[in-house]
Length: 442
Image (cartoon, rainbow, N blue to C red; front, side):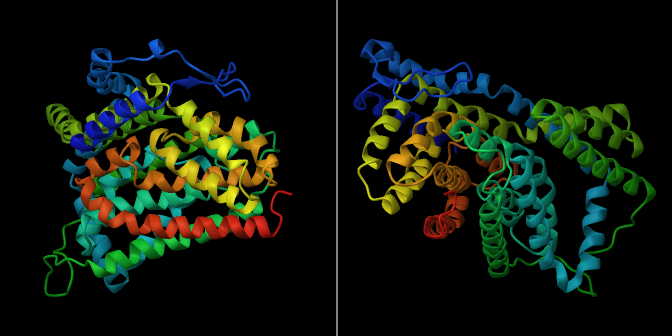
């Protein structure tokens, strides 16, 4: 994955040589001010040896920008290792496999539906990384490849994020910038969410069925039973209680990775205590777990460096200015699909829903009316474009962190996800066409 990231850094640097530097003015909230674009003097961005140095320092500056997420990854790695050392995970997984029997495939749709709701309601994103650690051993025990354990939370939350009805970090910000009432247009977005969620569940479930793996089973057709003790139950109670507290904090107090990390730290400590682990054992387990996710944390920081370098070369605003000028020349139906395609491609450089909304919506919202569309359609095109490519772009810190946590090479994930992207582009295009045909947002 580090090779991919450095290749992308090199491409950004080359683009910075050929694409003219330009910049919009920003308001106090960091949002683009329409009509203020101006080309920037070449001296404002690094060139020559300075550009080489900028490429080499980008990963470090990316780690600085992503420090809170990296710390979060270390903490959840340590906390889950302490929980794993209690034996509760193994005992619970084996009991679940015995209980489910031939219905084990139902774990996939049930869990993905929950993650999709999380993505749609409160923009679940970085929060899925710890669940990767939970689901990879679970799906192994159920007889499915580890990739399915990564796909359950990642694709589940991704479908919810892309089709979100009320996600405050994407729909909420985009509608506020566009001058639309909060939660307006939720009916059609709910239909879109349902369609995307069903597709995501079907795609992952079919993959799981096609790639069943052999597991060591006892004579009754299940994993060897392990005694489930009161200590195991207490650890699982701590885990479930911590997740409930986390969800409450996210919903009520807008907690982010620092507060969520504190909850996981408390979960790890409490799990160690109730399972009667020695303090030294807890400490060593925590360090071992953090070390296991070292590569995941580094990938997150290095990937953020791509965004940092793109900003320093002043190419993002130039791309936005040039693309918006071309869209206004197109028929409305083509312009809408063009907005979708533009947002999808831009998300590779700006893999942040709120950041992409602040960058593009001040331009594309009024531009949509010049194209014979409306602002609600522009928000929908942004929503799909931002959400779909999150599942495949190597600049996404969440994707790369989740893959590292699940020990899945990016090439393996790409072979799984590229066909899903083709389907998503088709589904998104059809949904946008239907929205335009029925006068959505008009």
